[in-house]
Length: 189
Image (cartoon, one colour):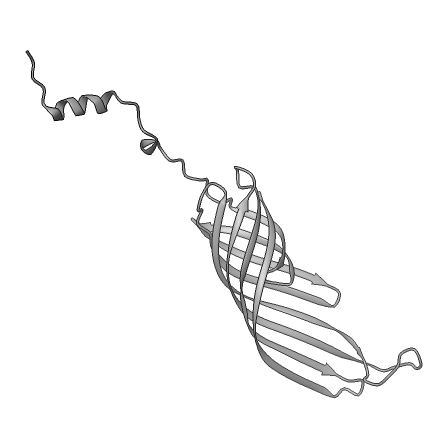
């Protein structure tokens, strides 16, 4: 008769047992793509074409730019976006930006419909630092298309400059601390 110890029997049973779900290999999500291009409303600017470049690991350079005949805004910052699942990518970011509106200005009290009003010029410039936190969701397995939603704040200054028709210049400036929220769509290439 052969006597087996309890530990020998337990070891033999474990060796013959199928692998458990806990012992299965976990497949890590793919790294975010190197280049992403899209559109952003709010966030680091008012309305921008957004471009992200993955520098290394979860660290991205984040830029944005928009221009129109009498206005512009641009931003530059750094994002840290580690994956938190197959398609979810939370992120935090810091950076800065500038926005401006400019153009001709009709003299105060002058009705252009009644007379030929002399024109001056006016501009408003906003310079700011931004901080934000958000989450991106990739709606395909290759992380090629994603939506991102973030919240944060802007801290900076608004400067108004006016030049009247006689050439007299005035300037005012004030500090701002504004909450912000943004929504973006990005496509990787």
